[in-house]
Amino acid sequence: MPRVLTAIRGGYDATVGTDPSTPIQFFTLPGCTCPYAQRTHIALLELLLPFDMTEVSGTPKPDWYLKINPRGKVPALRIPTENNAVIYESAICNEFLCDYATKLQKHHTLLPPDPIVKAKIRLLNDHCDNVYAKTQFTYLMNKDDGMDEELRTEMENALIRYEDALVESKGPYLMGEFSLADLHVFPFIQRLVITLKHWKDYELPNHKFPNLLAWHDSCLERASIKKSSMSKEKMIKVYERFVTADYKFGGLNRSK
Image (tube, rainbow, N blue to C red; front, top):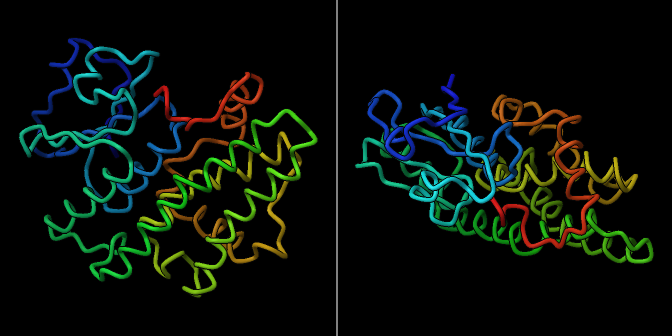
């Protein structure tokens, strides 16, 4: 089990790793609340890589953390055994972890060696970050009832990409086996299922997304998903501050 550090005494110097048995330091928000950091948390667990988890709180982020990631966002990784090299941005962190696991001769299928499969994974991940995620949160945050149908349609149109990918792969996951494509989008669809039901009384229609709904249920059964997830009650509490505020979506990770 990873050690969780909830308070840093001694500033930046206190975060410098010295234990070679735990070669990865994972920086995240308290309580598994960030979907971007959850991606990397899942990757670490799936790859069976030992890590320490340090929770970073406050807005703006403390100076010691800005020395690690000058963007102030999570996740970030630091690798003490590699001269304290720092990696940030979730997609980059996760590809690094796959390369690192391969270097350690740990077999995995998160990022297969086939270049066509790699490209498909990266295109799905790009679709999540630049198309789908924005439609989901725009719909969730919308307070104009007259716009709901249009925004819901835009979100469902973006989700068709994943339904089609599952049809092509024949499941149970986007590439057949669980991969970076699954863990990249899952935190957002997990939040969709809970938050849109709570605030919009919306559920993904089974006639449009039978494979995506089955995929969601399959993902929920994975140990890495269970360990990295918030409870339904906690998720609603966390998102209440976004839904009730005059929030303009620019990526929930903008201020993290």
